[in-house]
Length: 249
Image (cartoon, rainbow, N blue to C red; front, top):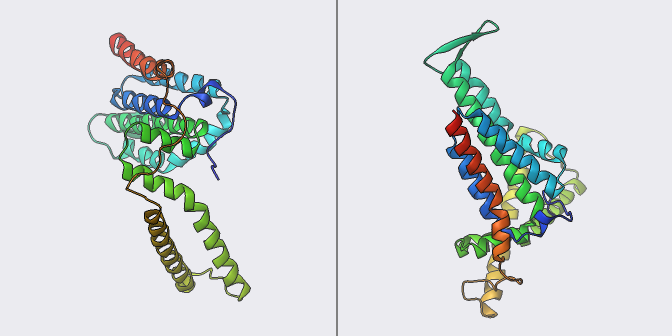
């Protein structure tokens, strides 16, 4: 079950996962280090995201709907113009802090671009390929292995939780109120114990089959140089936009 992956036939989908991860990471770094006053640079970054989304055949509505995950941070940013210090301006009878306005814009612009870039990566790369790409980028082995097991057993845990809920309902007990939270807590505890015991059994089974601390490497060759060149277009273009905005400012 991969709710964020969109199976499409596009050049972006066909790129090796490690080059896409590196491109998104470098693009995000460029966005983060861009001064918040360079408004034209952020407009350019938005155009780059739109161009990549078009090449990847990812609908704009799909991106915008899932980008609402950043709403709590946007709500926090709305407060800054009213609570900031320093120079103030009047707008529609409201006294707003200039530094607070820039701070709110900084959170909104950089957060939105980071979320959109991450969503594009998730939409064009399956979870298995993401883990494989991280492994090829020399991400610590313990992290990639934890992610691999999480991907493998998350559906098992969800199915266990579903069966436990069905068992409660079949016995006429469906806790819905705060004073009935004990049943839910007991269920979570039982699910944790089941998961822990299953993990111990799986680990022993792996040791008996020669596990030495590293999972077998995935199939497929590493990304060719041409793909690195293609993927570098995104961060290089972003860096060019940042430099041009700084020169013209």
